[in-house]
Length: 331
Image (cartoon, rainbow, N blue to C red; front, side):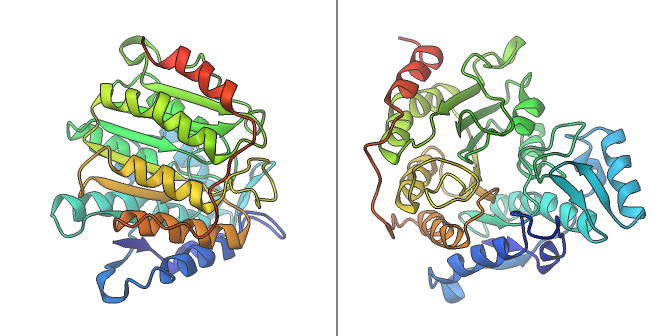
């Protein structure tokens, strides 16, 4: 199932801003390239109800967004602004995952791709930042956790998902795993941040050096992520699919190809049964890379491992994986 909405095009972050409407059009092009035709169920996203958003964000945060919306837009931080349609787009983006839950639980489809914007994983319970207004994946994960599910979130955006981490740092029901470039905005996600209280061990950060290639992402999966996921025993998988780890991205420095993204996604999908898998579009700012990576991910969702490019190797990252294994995996 594809859940998306043309209203997500109406959010404009600013002239020449990297988080632009064409990103979503590029994702749509990648989905069309899979040629699913009538096999693809398409659903228009619906706005998330405020009570679902308030499971993740506090009332003052919502009040501020509504206030800026009432004024016709405005800047939230140096990188993040709203225009007159941004609040509506953000609620559509946050609502898509809730519709995905309903469709999957009704056995209507096997997997869901939420092609929405603005992205969400930097939005904390109290703050919009890093191009993100509401935390889309967190709204979905919170709803599932409240139903008694054990939720795994895999975030392979090049930027650390600080907002998602903040939401679930004390919540043992949700396993948050982030593969991200370090150093890079927002400067969070060190190895030693592993959760707190009963949730120690349910936050897993794997910072990778600039230039890291797919060879080391595959090692991170085998040596760190897979054993942690097996021990946690998730019943649902949510993927924050940021495509800015691609080597063509203009604002990051990782060395991945769409084939590496395909492999990581396919391996992750095997963690839970069909009918319990959902992917959310996050970052990614090269349009061709978005299209090819989306095609690879959508193919993985229908059981095909498609390599439109060559898997990458030879870059740095081996030491990062070894350090992550020492911190996150018990001997």
